[in-house]
Image 1 (cartoon, helix red, strand yellow):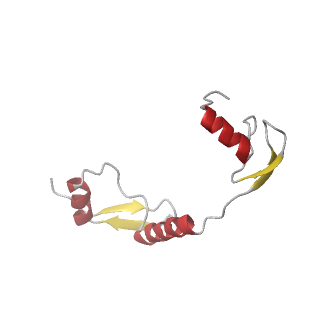
Image 2 (spheres, rainbow, N blue to C red):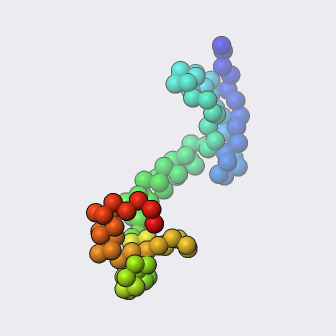
Length: 102
């Protein structure tokens, strides 16, 4: 199969970019099914943003009340409505007791 350069549109910036025959051959060799969605600039920006986000992620701490003992506690996540939240001690007790259902 002979590949020809193809013009695609970037989903991030909307600019047109050329997907070369050589790139298409590479995709075919690797058995990739989808065409690229982003131009090279947007792809690089996205890769940098993802890499930077994993190292600079802030820890979320939320003040809440333990569902088991009623003690005020801080948890390292935002609680989901309708789900129980436990202080460290109650969490450890449940974990070691093997409590499967909540």
